[in-house]
Structures are given as C-alpha cells and as structure tokens.
Image (cartoon, rainbow, N blue to C red; front, side, top):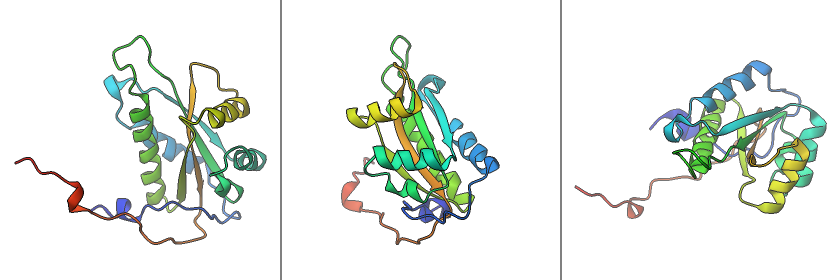
Length: 168
C-alpha cells in the first residue's frame, strides 16, 4: 500500500509557530483541482485561509473544528451544485475527491490535516455561508484544518475482509 495513504492521519493539534506557506497552499489546491469529477464538471471553488482571526472564528462556528485554534491554515471547499447539466447531483462525490487529494498531498508536504464536514448540516452551512459570504446556489461543503502536526496519532484504519464481496 502507498506510504502516503498509510501515513495520513486526522490531526487535531498543530504547531502554531510553523505557518503554512502560500507555496504549500498552492500545491494543496493544485492537487484538489486534479481530482476527478463527473463529466469533468469541477463543481468546486476554494477559500484558502491563513488569517488567525478567521481560523479562530471557524472554531467558534463549527463545534468539531476546534483544531483550527492551533492550525495555521485552512481550506474551505465550496460546492457548486449542477442543476441543469448532465452531471446533476454528483457534487458531493466530486468535492469529496478534491478533499481527499488535499489530505494526501498534505502528507507529502509533511503537513497535517483534519477534514471537518459542513454539508449537509443546515445550521453549519448557514454559519459558513455568512462567514465567507457564500451565495446560493453555492454550498459550503467542508473545511480542512492544515498545519504542522504537534501530535502523532496511531493509525485507525485497517482492512476488513468481512466487508468485501468478491465477484469472480
């Protein structure tokens, strides 16, 4: 198995003294934009945050994003639902793929991340829409806290053959 996949962890404590650089953010965003999407629709936009006050505000409005208090950056993925085109309804899968690309690219940069869902929680979506002026039909999909890890959690995932059906 790929070492990057094996080494990915959800980091909830970051070293606040080690900022994420613009170059690192650009690499993460570039990886996100290489994700597959239905009919190459790319139904996403990104908000890259390094401003301390905004990271703290994210922690205030999202009960599960407290790690933003020590993160030195975050990326909000904004979904753009397709309503009249061929790939209608696939934006959650597409934005999920973009999110995973960010998480994996971060490992290659020796950064830590934590993926916090916003969609489909209506109250959380409303708070993020207000905080970042996200206008309908766009939807705040998730926030990813980013920084240099200040913890090393154990791996939690594992292969479970009982959850696999082979059709041969």
